Amino acid sequence: MQRYKAVLTVFILLFLSSGLFAMTALEARRKYDGIMSSWIEGRRNDLQALAEFGNLERELDSLGDSVQKTYWIARVSLAVGQIRYYRDEEELSLDALEKSRDLAGEAAAGGAGAGAWRIQSEAGSLIMIQKGVGYIITHSGRVQEQAEKALSLDSGNVRAALIVAQGLINAPALFGGNRRKGLADLEALSLRTGLSPEERFFVLMALGEIFARDKEGEKALGYFRKILESYPQNSLAKMRIDRMAR
Image (cartoon, rainbow, N blue to C red; front, side, top):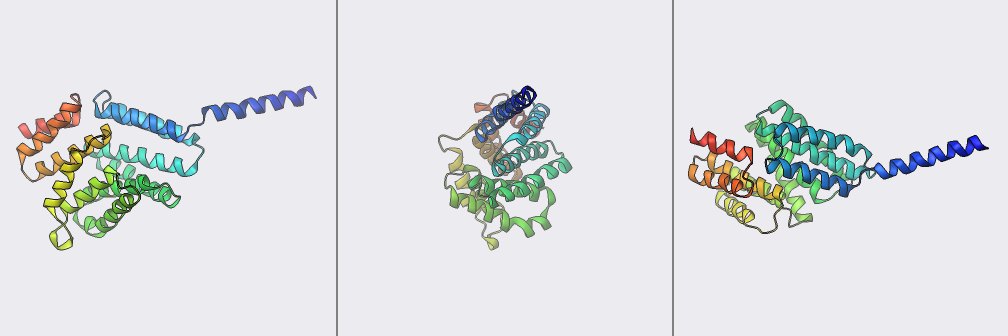
């Protein structure tokens, strides 16, 4: 009897312990935001952020809600793919982005909502950029549809609005492109109040890169400098400015 009680006590303690250390979606968000903010603000370099995102992904195994776990792993994989993209690590970037896209699709099918549709779209957008024209022609419609679906579920989804605007800028007029409207929409997004550090950074970065690509150097520099006004230690904006000064 005593032995039975001892085994039962150990079992209960293990059960309670696993419950105490299981991650919640709120904790996943807090940790994700902390890592992303520290990278944007320059308090963590690329490799440090990548290592911390790797640790977070392992921690997410303890998240009890399977749909939320899939969603958060998709979101972490997107962040990893973005950092790898900015580091010109194409193979590693594509691996992370394809994982993100596929998991976000599962999360969306499970009812994860606008965020999952946005992640699918954003991962797909970065995959297109790296895979080139043929892939863009085949997949751009789906990427836009996913972003529009996210906006239909949440009209305030800034990152989905960013993707829709980029689609307008990049698509030929014959296929529904409208550069003037896309730029106006993006600039309006950059002025929106209440943006998170992540939202503000990626909107300004997108504007800077669009103008840099189109050889409008002063406009591009203006947006990269706006990033540094908010995040003076941001290494990516500094690198873009240095590259344009050469």
